[in-house]
View (cartoon, one colour):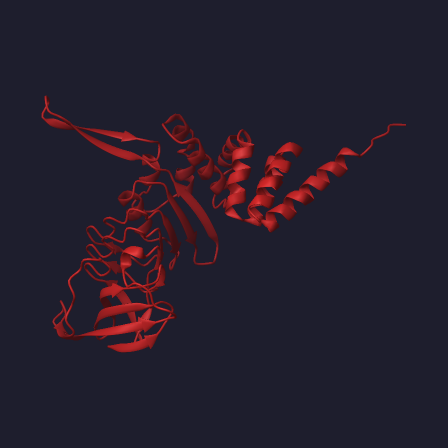
Length: 336
């Protein structure tokens, strides 16, 4: 087995073809791991069937024939990066795909039950059947665009996963924004008398997960769902997270949508402020304080939370805002 250094610890079985690398098996001992972009100067483009599945059968090294009839080599390589632990993908929580990856095949991540965060470039245009099966913790995605128009990955993920999703998109020019796709539940109940299944959707998140047109996301269409969403069954804190996330990252946000979101969170000042403090985002906190104009009592409550959480940056901003409000209270105005 060849040993090379890298950004994470991996034991890989790969198929080395003339112009690309196919990962057939991969196992890591890291909780946060980055798959290599290249091996031997060749781009890693395919994550094979059951590649990270915990129960996948081993692949024997040696010569192989590709689907195109070319001769390839199956070989093993170990990538080293610091101390090693237990080699088990079921402990993996944060995975970064290779930069050139375009194909994730059947059951590629099967059984990665602790995987919560997936980071990838928007080149992945094929997701195999069951590629995310039993990835029960997966709800956070970081997508980096590689072309002017987005690929189809986000549409696939929203259709595949019904829970609340937190998505960060980085555009080709470096602009970044975040979105929340609310949770919904599909329920199939057998109706024996009628010999069919009754299909029911619970939660207002279903339209958000299926807002894509030709598998592309239009943010104005996303914002247009807000009023209907509030009339559907939804969690108040989930709606708050959605509204504040759009205000914090106002990519293509219309004035109408902005006003709607502000109205919602201004009716929930304390809940919004406590949520933002947990994000440890000083710029976002400044923006929120400017928009909410919280009362002195609420700022005092926020200061107590910041002290308890040892959130020094937030505490400094809150104390400065408190001092500014107190100073304003002593201003005198005389008309002569």
